[in-house]
Image (cartoon, rainbow, N blue to C red; front, side, top):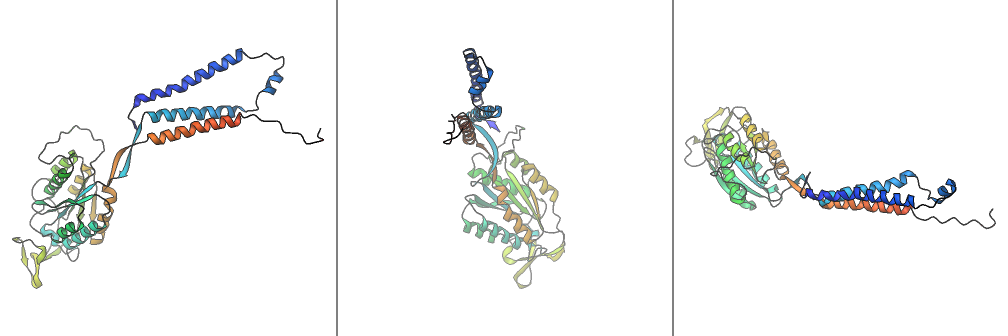
Length: 361
């Protein structure tokens, strides 16, 4: 917890001053007291209060002053709250290995379905942007709330050569910089002050890939750029290590992609449809996520990929923010002071003698 106006804590000096006034008042009363010949008469004249009844109102009043004085300093606490203004950049791998059939009918089809479900199920005012990457990376849809535009872009994804994970992260950073003035684009050097406050921008990058970086910028270099801008990167490793044929339909292959060739029934194959072992770089994906404050997920089938994307909004749209607690402290302080005054009045009330029944002794 932090205080916006710490100098306001000087108000707490009111309590020791009140104690001093109380002590001085009691001392004067003792000096001006009427001397009576019998101690018994003095005890009979005093109200029948026990010692704990005398102390409870005093300590409640003291606690109320302490809490109220703290409220004057405007306390703040860092709490995790949902942020409806968060932007999610979804970067999808469209390299040739996404034609692998270890996830039926192939990885790309399963990824497209999971992405469509993610877009449809997304709730709130936050925007979604779409980046596609193979040997290069490009922004397909800028961050938007237009569901139809996003769904059409997902349906139009086409495979191509190479895998550029680092470029996908950099493209996502630039897309976020277009809508968030607090995020510098990748062409601008961000000074590193060496202080990690744990506070992140509300915008998040999600990278879905089935392989390892083969082109462009090293993923850790891109992760460092995201970290410097306080952007979290969540990574998803998709697929299995089982050698499987590469089969994509004709509308899943980009024109001019020499690594594909047509197959029977209008389909396409990668490497002649032979089984191929896909080497996923989970170590780098994990490091990228940890460096930026995100998290790495492994999805070996369509169902687990859908679960990961379905649960992501509950994590990426949460932000740690400074929330002012002044009103809560003020209410608590007022309640304690009122309780102290009320108990003091109740216990000090004048009790009238009970009337004796007629004919009583």
